[in-house]
Amino acid sequence: MSLKLASNSSHNIIYQLKALGCIKISGNDSTKFLQGQISTNAEEMEQNKLQLSSICTHQGRIVTLFWAAKVDDVIYLIMSKEIVASTIIHLNKYAVFFKTEISDTSEQFKIDSFFHSSQPDSEPDINTHSIQKAQFSLSDSQLTLRLTPIENSASELDRPEQDNDWFYQLAIRQIPWLTLSTQSKFLPHNLNLPALNAVDFNKGCFTGQEVIARMQYKGKLKSHMHLLTSKTLIEITPETKIWANNKSAGEIICTASSPPNGTALLALIKDNDLKNKYFQLNSENGPILKLN
Image 1 (cartoon, helix red, strand yellow):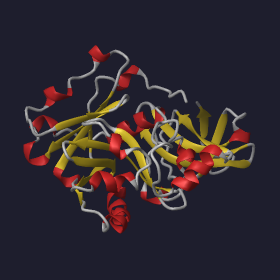
Image 2 (cartoon, one colour):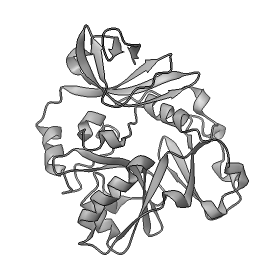
Image 3 (spheres, one colour):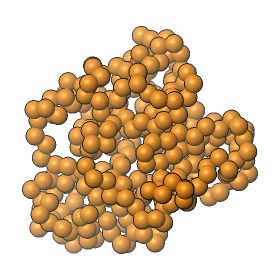
């Protein structure tokens, strides 16, 4: 899949985020425990490197979508803060069989982020924005997340949060996220997770693996995730229907607005309706959305 990159306006910007939370997984069996739960290979996690991944139900539906990162002997799962508590409840059902501890560390860190440019020299030096040594930076090919302990955070980090702008940048890169209302609603293939390297089909069994593998090798998905944009700011909830030619053509997965850019929406759209370049929300009289 070819990811659509944002304009250079997102480069050199460090976003302070309050909408992200963090789960800490520690203990001797942590890697073994996660290997049976997450859709990527926990045994091949690299130090301080972000890996987009998911946790699914036995029916293959995504309970949570997150970035995993290993720091020394601890594994952190970074996700939308609103789904942290329900994710911990889900994980605890399986953790009783392992020597592992699961804790919500969302209130222990300040989290900020920047998106990578095609010109590395133009990227901000995220370490210059805090003199504290306790922080750690985690990166993948598209973004860096920095976690700084609250008690060690520098005053320079006390800026207004920029969650909407950051989620807008995720959306236009076609990187989805989940909310409370969309937990256990979508298959990994609905959110293009295999194309985002968020599913490893060679790692062996994990919860939901049989259903997900069947979709990969034998299934035929009739709807796929696509990016829609509007020049206006639209407040819309996930699972809202989108329309084309007076009929339902799909539903919203996640959305974010960012003045003056407008609104970016990731939507699950029926393949048969992709011949349309424009869609509408709610009904034929809703706001116009452009297919990107």
